[in-house]
Image (cartoon, rainbow, N blue to C red):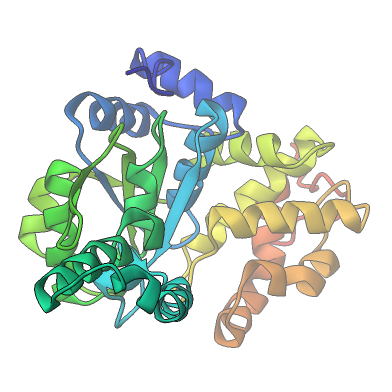
Length: 326
């Protein structure tokens, strides 16, 4: 059976393909995707929030033109919400119809045994595929050409669900007691993400390929912003990435993510900024930092950070023309 995974021919092809979807990959990320397809193993991606874990799944789906099926994890998530449920409304409607036709159905039966036999046939229909409501895990396995299954924030689920998930992903099949075993038509590419809210079990980690995505270096972050923000000048791009990188080195509660860098770049363009300016930075710092304590911690350092981001010429003046007072 053909699938939608044919473009996954090499690590280089994956890097280039993700680039067409606006995702700036690394050799490590592309290698993990290549191995996940070849070995039929899920990828467990860990790292800070907003560094592109979820976006990797979305970009793979866009590039390969495959459905992206997301299971958002939370405390209390159970098998019914993740795998399948019965369509109780349709079953109830079917029950009403069955009651109305009951005399007609068993009218020809001349004894109790035959009557029960006829009803048993309809009981089997009551729990048939047409009454089965596929949830994300089962829905991903039902796709004819494959799919990208994103199991987001697995660390927010309970340990019991983690164990259940391990069993489902081991063979890419589901056992429905009333129907039997349902096997994946084409095993999905599975991406699990974790923000390290809790430590995951060793059994799940052994089953998966591990990938850590951290904050990008200066060059990669520039490429990411360039891919996501149209019309930004090289000067402003270089300055804002320098500033963000310096903010991440500070002692703050939550370091700005790539997503926040992109939002800040769009904000500066919206304000028609062509170069970083101390006042602009103060007015828009809430786009970059999400905690008031972090804004308070960074504020005294803004003049120095802006000067360093802009750079100075041989005459001791910044690119904006203001003297560098140290």
